[in-house]
Length: 541
Image 1 (cartoon, one colour):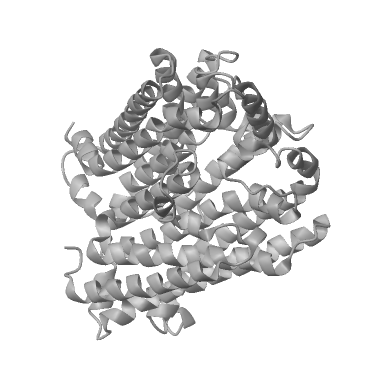
Image 2 (cartoon, rainbow, N blue to C red):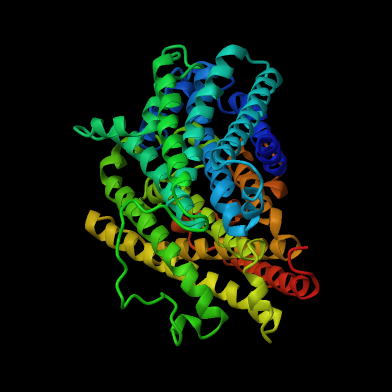
């Protein structure tokens, strides 16, 4: 059981950060409920919230029993929490085998008298317990949040709800371990992230598209949503939960089989191919990508950028083309008092609809990509790849700035190509949009993502190990400040600390140049700090 205990020890900080963070989110649920639904016009507010939830069913799924606290929690939070936990599971699962293999730490472990099956299964068991611990902390946070708000919540039903969440997140964690036998760590994480996003929107979209209901059956989120223990009109579907548990097993078995039948530091081949005599390395001598540190870093970054661009462009086009059909149902809600309480602009223009339906969600996705850029940079040092580069007579500041510049080029290309997709989709849908505001919205995305990358590089310069995790935690806190700041009546200066709040709503109001200038200045400051610290610090110490 040594491997199992060591796995838990390695992830104790991540479990604490994610568990406590999500528990704090759950702790605010009672206050949020009383802030959104309360007062003498409670019935009218519930009716308005029901209309809003129905309009956004293509994003959050169907809403049930919003007249109860359990139904509110189910609709507002239990659709998001499993996605967040699935992200943790795929990141943790991705590092268990392939991550340690690329770092070289798995070589030492396999030199001990432990079979490969033992290594794989004990590490997977560690992932199971880590996820269970986070879910337990979430359960405690939600129970405490209900008590803080003076609300009734069944503890047993809440435990079943988080058991359901645990099962679907475990599926994606197990899936990324299996993908890690076929691809590198980065590619495996990309494939699992794509599968997570695709299956989520397959389920929510299938509920809204006539004749496409069969798509939902292909998504694990369909079976997750069959059980809503906190919603009295739905309850628990034990067969669906059992199916979620069962489908994990063939994925686990497939990953284990591939791990047992491949060479270490290699990939499992689904079919045997005979290499051509003329096969050459991707980076052959004289290649443009090997000219300097910047071009080499750019060559590593571009493939991932293109994958993200394709996924984001598809999502943007789909959402923009859906605006005309959703416009009528949403316009009637924009004048409601509840929208004002939730912090939305009271406007029925095309720009407001795009802000509401598109930019609220894609900003989170852009920020997630920025975090992956930081994780890639910190991973270079953790995996020992920087040692060879630092052995050359190249100043450290040039190495760091070259990698940061490569990240900036990737961000610029991502922003430009997604803006182009949005512009073309608006023209195809016949939407008349202020082009200056649309460009400002995407420019603002670049500024925000650049600031996040700069902060991440600064954190990596101090300690690359927890840098990506700390940055992810800061992003989550920033998002919660913007999401719940108005509802929780936080001081304005506290809400203004959120980078999401500083982004604003440029597609509606135009660019916020003072905010942009401050963020650009902070980018220079954080990059300067990163260079200073990187020059003075021992590598991987």
